Image 1 (cartoon, rainbow, N blue to C red):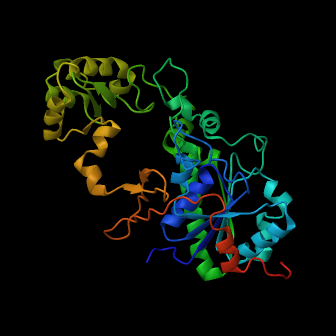
Image 2 (image 1 turned 30 degrees about the horizontal axis):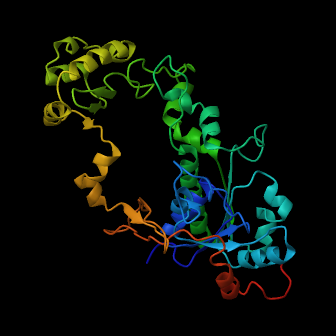
Image 3 (image 1 turned 45 degrees about the horizontal axis):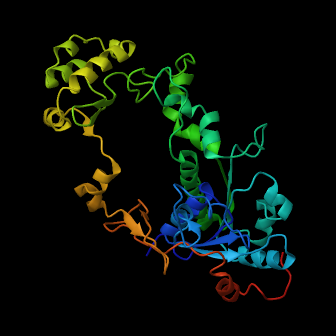
Length: 387
């Protein structure tokens, strides 16, 4: 039995942060029902990555919304709103990611909804919180990475700020939202009451940076100093970084510079015995390492370094990774193809309980695919007052 079996999650959110939290709850056994606009639905349905689509929806939408059902409702229609409120009365969790104030105007904010269902756990995602001068800014991943200072950690010194080339803010915020919702559900077992769980993209990205922001706050507010040569971490000394070899790349983590020199036979490194210099002369040291490692193959260096217990790694491309024995051992891939559509492969829930991973590969729903079924099952078209 999955941990959240029997729980009903209503996912009013769209794009990535909110839906990724609902996906994780669904992976853990909850029944996730997307509440979507008739005609258009979740805004990520047409939002393509590399022009990939299947059966009219983007592959991005289909991977984030696998293992869910779709219920269409026009929230401006009194009849549809009545059905939605009847569904809320029977749900355990509700997730939304509208801008602050939008749900209140519709009468679906937490204070209104808790009167319908006091046991409901209400999760909300914003860009920058619910108060303050930035609340009307668009809560978009690149914008949040930029305004949070994160982009100044990437790239080499002298280069412009560089964001991560993925939706890091959205994904990390979705993790926080799922954590908060599950904690609130646990509390409900003792109190009988639901609660409000609030997360924001900005707070999540700042939390992601906690180790470096803590360094900044306790180090005289000195800004991060990126390495000019193959930067990998603004606050870590040489040899930390990725280096070219004669046939590829090798990653070196934390370790002694003179010890490294002894292992690979680079006498120019053995004189750097002062650990302070590993940072103050970081680029100088890394350039020596880079020039030396370029003289032989990745396999050669890995053999020497791994035998000595020095922390290092090959640098795989995705095609090499998916063919590796470890990737295959993890059994990480799912095929979420809709009937009549193409094969769509994505990654499974990374959480295990016991030996077996969760491999639920139910496809993402077509827009409104389950509306009639849900109306009948939950009795949403019945007459009567709603609190």
